[in-house]
Amino acid sequence: MTMAEKMALPLDLSIVTVSTNQLHLTKKLLASLYSVPWDSTFETVVVDNVCDDGTGEWVACHYPQVAVIRNEARRGYPANANNGIRALKNGRHVLLVNPDVECLPGLLDTLVAFMDQHPDVGIAGPRLLNPDGTLQPTCRRFSTPASLLIRGLHLDSLLRKTALMRRYLMDDFDHRTVADVDWVTGALLIVRREAIAQVGLMDERYFLYSDDQDWCASMWQGGWRVCYVPQAQAIHAHLREGIKKPWSRAAYRQLVSAIRMFNKFGWRLSRTPRAVRTRGDGDQSLGRSDQHVPGPADDGEPGYGRQHAALGAWTEPGEGGN
Image 1: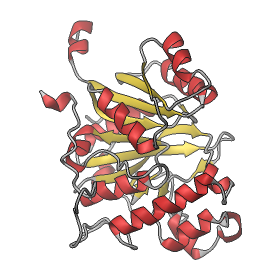
Image 2: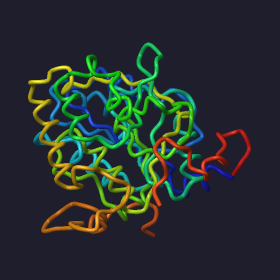
Image 3: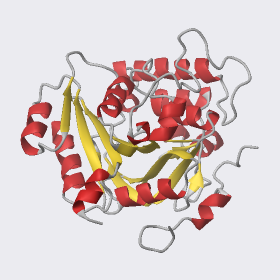
Image 4: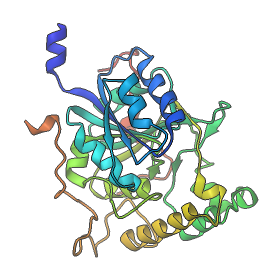
């Protein structure tokens, strides 16, 4: 295939990151994206969420191929992510990535290959590592009021080994295994644009926190699978401001978001759609197909932590397969 023919094809990824005075982290993220030779093609946008550290100016100067959106007023994460998704129209999939992430070799190609081989997957998340190389659990079972209260009150270290928290954090799961999971944390997600067109963009009623779990629940209830793909790896600094300071504004937002999520889906989240209260007046709830997402296309519940049967045929790039 010639270069001209490649350029005429849709890109594999539209990559969106949001920075709120995180220039030092954004520099590392972009370096990890643009210093590695990927087979996957992509476009990138950085949303400058009213930064006073010069994020937008620095990106425009050092990475002219990266689009920059500059907010006039500070907005919540889902609103910023949605703006980035709307701004980039050429990727078959969307990659949402936090600025405190560093991409490791193979990450993009592995995620794209997985999505291409599993057309019923709406969202997938990679294996994330702490800066010291240890595992950072990022696939979870759906939250319960008790699990969120423990984390919100910074009781993780005290109650981490309880049955409730071990179940929530999937301690009984082999994190080297590809699997269907309830949800994956939003530090790094690949999302099928077709699924976004059907289910909808992120719910902008959240400012921060619970938006990732909400989106995964909406995907499941819209008929799309959510998967954990450990063969794709990245390093995540994992700031967790709301957990470090349980009485901070961030912790308050975390509580408000949790209440909003439970009010929307019920106190027991499930992969199965609720029979009652799917859409209401102005509700950005399940099946939000009213939110048009431009892109190339414009021209019985599995057991927790079990590998989906269809995943057994998946092969990493370069190992054979389609």
